[in-house]
Image 1 (cartoon, rainbow, N blue to C red):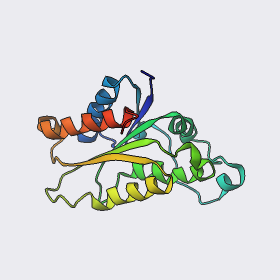
Image 2: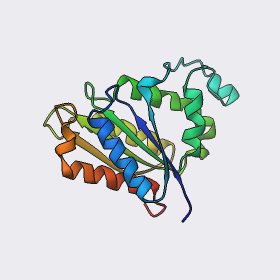
Image 3: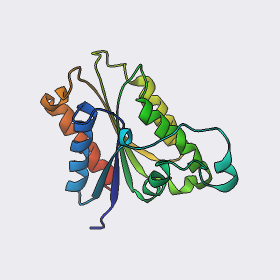
Length: 186
């Protein structure tokens, strides 16, 4: 079996929280498929908002010198990607939004993103199943634009820190999405 690389991106500033637990379970699923996995925590990184300077369009690289420069090659090298974020005000966390906005610099090299398998996991404190629809729609459109393969999404109601740990169904689905992100058959 060919070993693939799956990058897990944790968009919550809360380590040990619901998004982190879901992402860890997804990466276990990917590792179970023989994938090499890595988890990055966006809250631990220096990520600055896009400047809309168009420097990346001219030179093919983002001109900002922050930790996103470490993430671009990882994004391009990964066969699979799992992004976990809490729902904050019907959208992703600020850390996740900055991360995704900085994908603008990938447009000149979008062929490097084409076909990558990606899963999105999110936790929200609301019982309304529609709470994550805007967040998921934003990701779905971004992935479609870059011709990435969305293997699935998971939105989980979990209002207490770490509460998702008791939700066996959600943990099993997160693990399945990790397997799909690592599997060439997805």
